[in-house]
Length: 251
Image (cartoon, rainbow, N blue to C red; front, top):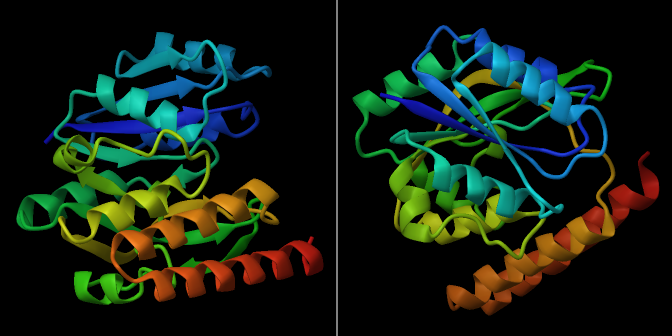
């Protein structure tokens, strides 16, 4: 099964080469990369152009203005040709067996639509911070969706129908767009996680004010949409408080 990798890049010249190299090192080779340069002002466009010239599986799309990750991923998805969509961030590294493991699982489990994996969290210098896992079964993921994102976004491989039927990512969100997508998807599609860490995930730093605002907004909207306003409102308040604590007390 062909896999199209969706990636958005903005001013990540110091890290994007390692991310793409990890794709080139995949043992599963039936993939292509749709990478959108979101109007970078560093050397990212030159780096992407060099990789596209080197490997015909890599296509670079360039935004005329900075539109954010949601709009960029939507542009990549709409240009994609594969029945499977894989996510990859511009500062993470996929382990060589990632695509092979995920494709094999999805081929053997046609009822699963969204498949994540565990990940090794690393800091900006590449130092390991430990393994992060999400629950494996859909029932457990759905039960915890207001507490944690059910799948780690850069580890995801999903069937194209998920994005086609949901209309892709919310174009108005620059942050928390993954949690918004999962909230809209989890009652219509089946999720699973592999317990094996197949990605080195660069841990985010202190949450920004826009991150706090949009994350709380997504939780509140989900609660309202699902007729659970108390749950959504309470979780939005808890999320805001937790982010403020991290912002004030952690570097």
